[in-house]
Image (cartoon, rainbow, N blue to C red; front, side, top):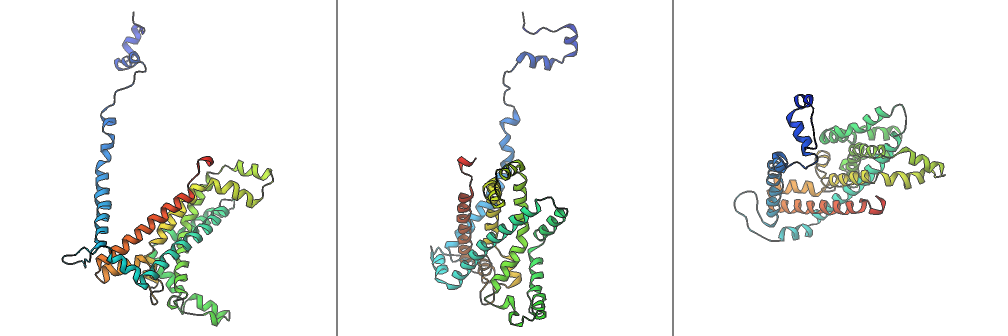
Length: 319
């Protein structure tokens, strides 16, 4: 006799399919059409990403070993472009400016962004309005922001006007035309625009920190700095990793702000690898040389990203 018996009512009401499933019990279902080919649905996207992004990048990187000018044939010249880069003082200066802007902007944006996130994570009445105000520069165009700051740094701009009104005429100077201060002016603009982005990342990380842990540490006698260093900071380590990684990548490829503020001047004081790539490839027609600079910049970004991920990765014993 079958283990499953149905009454006359069940035979009428219970659908045949349901009865069949009940007879099958917990037997695993056979893979259907969707489960068989689910990854095939992503195949067009994968092909497009590989073809448009990676293959195109690889082909562009190959031109770094040629003398192509953008027109006509080219010749393989090996590492000559890279040798020329490291023998050119202006390119070494551009490399130094690139590293300076990347490292300084990452440190400043993350320190200030974390401070703002800690402050606005408290229950103050104006926290929502302040969050919007601090995040507003992020959504603005880098060119628009740069032109606003170009007016602020102008010799007849607000900064020098304030210094004159305070009797500090010796401090008045053409900020963007002074080789000693131009790179610092660019750094100010970058930090001003990107701090809000770091603040939002840290606020998301702080939202995941249970307040009970911090309260327990406070009951145990931990001070404000001890609670931050031993409780809050380890808990937001993933947020630190994301904010610093994105910051170092953005800092190494800064382009719009420099072109709008100084165009690499004065006397190459604010040139970076990104601006040199553009000028060599599209202004001077040295596509091979420009590709070598771009490949060097990509390698630097990759190295910094790997180092940064290793430094901020969670250790197994901390998981």
